[in-house]
Length: 271
Length: 271
DNA sequence: AGAGGCACGTGTCAGC
DNA sequence: GCTGACACGTGCCTCT
Image 1 (cartoon, each protein chain N blue to C red):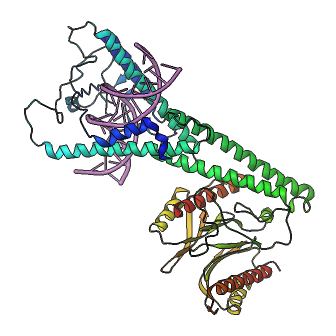
Image 2: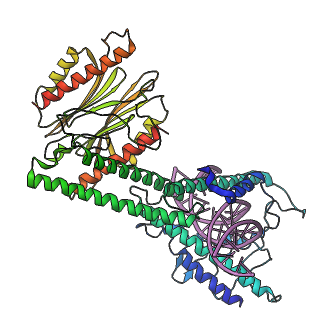
């Protein structure tokens, strides 16, 4: 992953890390007229006084003159520079990981290509998933109406992503997803989560609550059991925030939401 | 000339600013720039103090004089600025469309969140697709629908992160059995039962307690949720009564005991 | 009152 | 050459 950067980046990295400031000297910083948010901007034809002198400026070399209460502002400012650098670095890494997730992408693809391809890739996958989902439903429906009993019985139970097929008729049954740490049972709008976390990771409950919030799930009840080496949770949640105009679509959405939640939870625990 | 340049600039600005994250329905205004139609609002008086002077270059206002070979360089430079602006704009739009593709994302999510969530989303979708394919293949391969009320579930879920699959040695993980009505997750001496019963069968809780007693299981906690048509239970139990002379045998015994319990429970519910 | 985010202008370095 | 891509420093703005 890191490697991606190639010499290009690594050089920059070097740069980034090694020296802190020098470039400034010249720093004309130019003019910025046109400031965004705040307003300003000079209008069109009329010129106006743009650029004011402002030296205010920071650590200029040479040129004596007044140094005074620099220091407070100084460190403040340096901190700003530093955080901005960090932020950029973070972004770079995120781009790298995003890059690594997209197949068939030139190793040195630039940022726009990355985002672009990410968009395309996501669209493709969403489309594919949608199609598969539709296909599946139609299969189920067809089986029900035509041959009711015979046809599609096989394949109940199975790998992790498995809906217990016979469920959909009218009764209330669990549709279950399993992983070593997180097991989720969806039943209508409700879901039961079983979670085990060992060694104990601080912040798990916080993350759970965050996820509930993110996906607009209500926490009906939560049961926590601790022992020195492990902690287990049982959660009962309810999905309320999803418009239910079309029951089938809604149930699909609920399911997807739950799946998403469970996946993220699992990833977090294993991270 | 100068004027032209200015004009140019301001126009471009307009363009550039044309909504930063436009797609998003609400708001924003993003912040920046308040332009109203053609005019610009300029800031309060105080603001002006900024704007650096710095000669070096660029379109300074008024001040006639030194035009000479400025222009080529000048124009050159402006072009640089312009292209950079365009590039940023492009990036912004791409971010916006990327944003629009990710479900459950806060409308004003910042760039890192967008990339972050994109990564997560892609991972999830890839995983889901992979699972679906596996599922499909297995479906084609074997119609193994033998009795299978309780299919034994391995575990495993995600591929990329962890081989946590059967690391049962020392870690604490779930071993899960599923059926439409009863899902059981064993972890060490403890187990979580998820039960759904519809229509409601009177006496279920009594039966549960009877079973716990029969197999010498302790009921650590029980959560019951009722609605008119269904009732769900989450139970946390602990097996204490089993002699533990030989740890391996013991864990086997515990597992068998739980399996037996779950089976009887399921049979009762479906009877 | 302050931390984080964004877009700007700017210099620099790769590669058609 | 020139063109595009990047990272940088910097001012301003928002959200808390």
